[in-house]
Image (cartoon, rainbow, N blue to C red; front, top):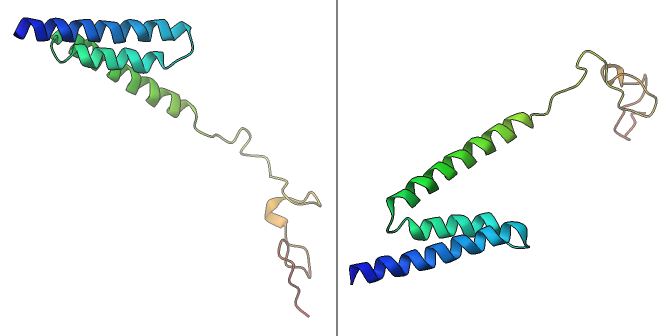
Length: 107
């Protein structure tokens, strides 16, 4: 009975994993199916658990490196920023007698 369960898990796991490999080149969630198939195989096989763990660790490292590379950096921090219609620097945006950028005026 135990061998029958192991065989059934192997057949289902390899089928799902193979479908995932096919979906890598056809429309569909290929990597998701591969991970699902390895998860099914991991129920009975230690090598599948190890491979799944290595894939998860690799994906986590890749995600960390991608998000670390996407930090927003000011390309020229020493130059003043032009941010109003008159083209003045952001530090001197106040015009005498006005409350720019607000529209209320004091009489």
